[in-house]
Amino acid sequence: MSTVAVRDLTVSYNGTPVLDGVDLVVDDGEMVAVIGPNGSGKTTLLRAVAGTVPVQGGEARVRGEVVAGLGRRQAARLVAMVPQDPVIPRGMTCFDYVLLGRSAYIGYLGTESTADCRRAYEALERLDAAGFADRPIDRLSGGERQRVVLARALAQDAAALLLDEPTTALDIGHQQTVLELVDGLRRDRGIAVLGAFHDLTLAAQYADRMVLLVDGEVMVDGSPTTVIRPEALELFSGARATVITGPDGEPIVVPIRPDGA
Image (cartoon, rainbow, N blue to C red):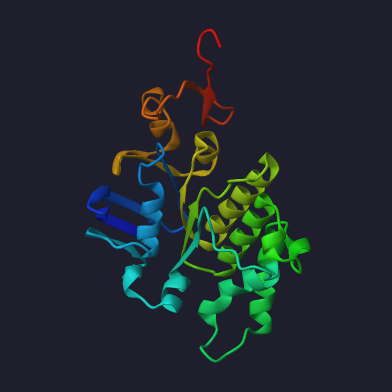
């Protein structure tokens, strides 16, 4: 079953097309990585699926629902998004910030339950961030903050998880920790994961499929070995790189310095 279904999606900003007739599906338990040059529409695609940008044509559905037409609490049960630049409340503790991810399950006049608090703390633990629980989130480093933002999304227990550059500001160890966690969640819980990535090698290691987006159009949709090819790298402005095969058959992108450098 397709958790996320995007059909003929068109989005424009001030009359300028950003996405043009995009088709994409993400099945239960599948991880799909969206790659492409800067300005290719990766973030806009995620926002369209989340229902946070107007759509001029086509549609994006999650579990059969157009998220943009739902109330905030209903939408939050379907989609959790980790943005590149999340809004960080000043002075709020990390625990309280993650607990906001449970808002969709709390009545309008209700308060969080013991189970909600437990889910929030478990999410922090899984991101190796339980030690930050009582610290103000605005006083964390960029990498620490990113882990807490992801913990909030995990606490949401949504059907689809949207990741916009989820490993930004993380060191290599925590990049692997975060993606291993996401990989385990989508396999164990059947969560559909759609993520935008700059690191092509890292994305290829974890994604079932990759979608190459260029100027708002899908150029290639397939396995990492199908998408990560030398001709695809030529679409990235100024890129000098080659593709080699890793020990498990995965493509690895290797930068090459220009002659004379």
